[in-house]
Length: 323
Image 1 (cartoon, rainbow, N blue to C red):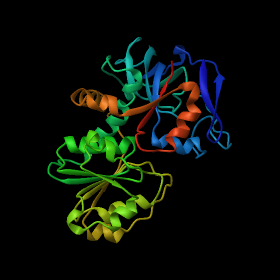
Image 2: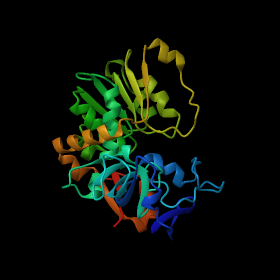
Image 3: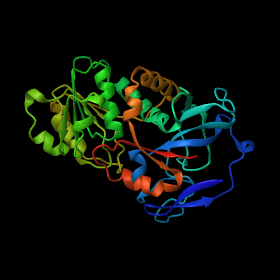
Image 4: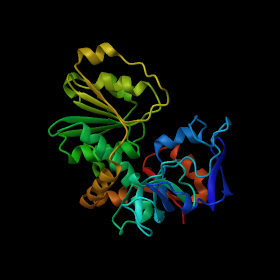
């Protein structure tokens, strides 16, 4: 089968490898013929050479594993050892081995769900990140009437803005270095701020402090400090961005004195929230056309990741077509 493989930081090469066999599936696993994939911000550090605990890791500059690193996947079930999935089913979800830039992948069936068959695969890729956002917003409780801010208005941050607004937030501020003004209303953003998080916080008055702040950037320490400084007394922060370091320093006295709640967590109940994402997209069909801004062929994976690493106005989700 074909696959794309990192051979050096930010360098992909097509390779031919032995395909996985249906006979080797463990209970609960699915063999998937890939149709599309979505690039997530959490994939990008590994493209540049960040360490990932992978069976193929040999201590080189990158993990030389076929299909790595991509986990947002859409495909058709080729074989299944999971009771919810049958051969021929079209599904969306997680490639649990982060190896989805390949013709075939083996993945956990609990991370997959069916979806609206009218969606093209390169649109259906948005259901996985949407499921993650819906799960995170559930953890915040009732946010009706509250003011919210989302730091980071990339593909994940824009979905947070939309879901917070539809869940009843009184107002949503979107903060990003990239100008998102032109599409703010599509994603439920009442005020699009083009600035760094630190720059926004420096000019934030007490009356304007949000009671809910989402960190949707990750990969750096500074944005967590900005969240703590920005949020109103008694408010809550959801740290969604993936950290690159295990230890993050933060102002514990500020957390204490402001009576804040700091939340985080990975998405669980994946099949349930994928179904919820499918229903949400049916309720808000305008997102179908707005969210995925660019589609590359899988053979052009290198250019796709280079594009994802250089965000600009009008660029949102980047998808790979595996056909």
